[in-house]
Length: 140
Image (cartoon, rainbow, N blue to C red; front, side, top):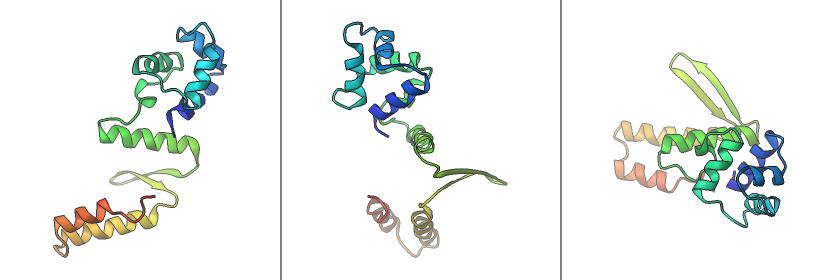
């Protein structure tokens, strides 16, 4: 989900108009236009503006920011937004911890598991495994 959709989703969840959000972050003249520009991706808000928005929208600022430098945090953000957009996420408790099932991803994960197994068994090299990941046929 792009930043504009994230802003719009949070704004609507909080029952705010574009004008109300604009004013709450300090844009008093045509604040609705500025928020519409952000939501439509015609303008990209600076980090400080995103932080103000997050505060006004009662959200963690990292949920609005772009790609996170910490891969685990970025994966969590993507899964949280995917859960918001679709019904594709299923979280299942197991003896090993939590299992996340993502609809329509079984084939991709099965092939990845197979490649990782071949690596563990010494049937392919680390270089071949890396090459498979970098050319994963399921990336669109």
